[in-house]
Image (cartoon, rainbow, N blue to C red; front, side):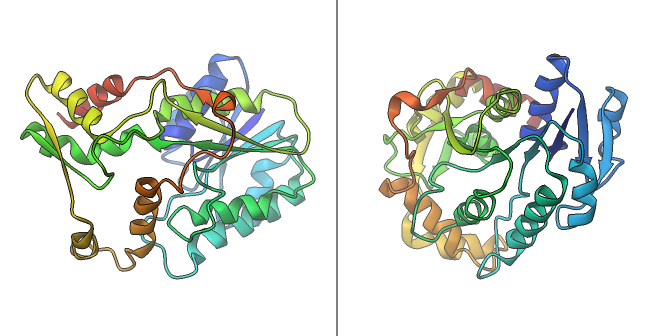
Length: 287
């Protein structure tokens, strides 16, 4: 049986569905048992645990053949990243105590970057969990295609505003369905020690490609416009962010190229889901 944290989200849910389809047992680890009810109805065991509660996580991970670790995202972290640090500390303690057969941890493209940015939270996760006495895989996916959900309303009006720049520069992106599917596959692998697996979609994507895909899905012209860098901070603060610096530096990292994959191009795994498929689903779900 495999314990899945973050099962109520897109990636965790995709991983659980893939495991169930493969005939594997799944333990749904969720803070709110009500939100995990649908998984119980599909035959999953349910363990209630807050991701900062080492004791509850230990009980959830005990006896498992493997666990999938998904650190809840914090998009506006306090200085020093204390929110994610509390989760990572509890997860490390639980893995040491429960000693499951293996762990697959959702990390990120660019986790090896030395410049501090929003993704540094996952860099520190890798550092904290990389020396455990259980086999660990860090799954590093590219930029999530589903981030384009924010662009659906403006795309309907004929344009998308892009922080990724220049508009014709392609970067690794991937669908959450592929991330969950690969996570499930990795959980069923056998390996020793710590390893990194990098993952992107079928092809790399530029903002202009996102606009073109929206145009196909919406059956109307759509173009991308770059958001000037000197407006980012005031814009993010107007949206309620208190500490926009890490997010800005993350976007800089993609735009400047220091957030990228670390391994050889030939070793990067490829997903199957296309951008147009993801955007079609986002538009349909938006109504």
